[in-house]
Image (cartoon, rainbow, N blue to C red; front, top):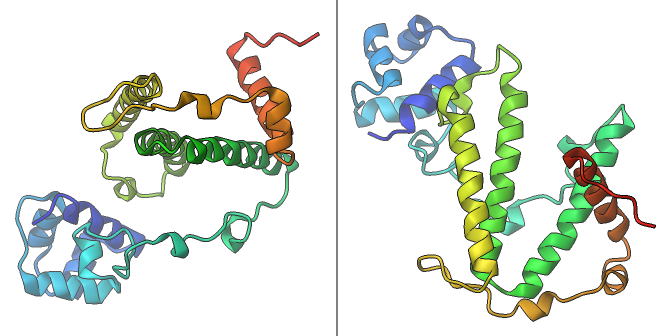
Amino acid sequence: MNENFPRIITLLRTERKLTQKQASEKLDISQALLSHYERGIRECGLDFLVKTADFYGVSVDYLLGRSIDRNGALLTVEDIPEPDLAQDNRLRGSAVPILNKKLIANSLNILFAMLQQAQCKALTSQVSLYLMVCVYKMFRVLYLSAPKNSKNFFSAADGLARGLSTAALEVLEAKIAIIASGKDVGEMKGFENSSSLEMSEEEMQKAFPLFMSSLLNLIKNAETEMGIYIKKS
């Protein structure tokens, strides 16, 4: 069927807080057969696929892992809300997460402005993937710290995820360094116009007046954590 299918139907069942016996009764199959589907031992037929989609209120494309949207919609740039406008992303309470979010978000504005200025597709894609894996790692740690949250939310097995994600970061960092040096990586073209990113700190202050203080603070915090930060005279 599809390697994502067993994980997704298990996730949907556990989200509903249904046992395999309860779900199998609703789906009109035996518990043993549902167990085989969830473990990927057997492939289901089209009838079960459609019945499952109807029961959980999702699309067949979602069940098969063809779409990350449960309704089967394909994500476009226009579909993605601005972070500061999304109601679900409002942080309340302690000022610390709000402050840190602003430092990181504002610094990312500068980073992606530089990538846009570089006009190097390979550099943009690999830096973006690197950041995505970083967010994935931290989200996974936090999400799975709650014992009742389902591990089936992720495709990577719990015992492998940390090693695989760390390895992915190392590989991506190596690719980024090679591309940034002007060399090709496979079919990805190296960055040929490094002079386009030449900017003094003063020039950066003028180009990013709203964001530079955040970037400078982020650099200070990062280097302090690294144990190498030296206060400028």
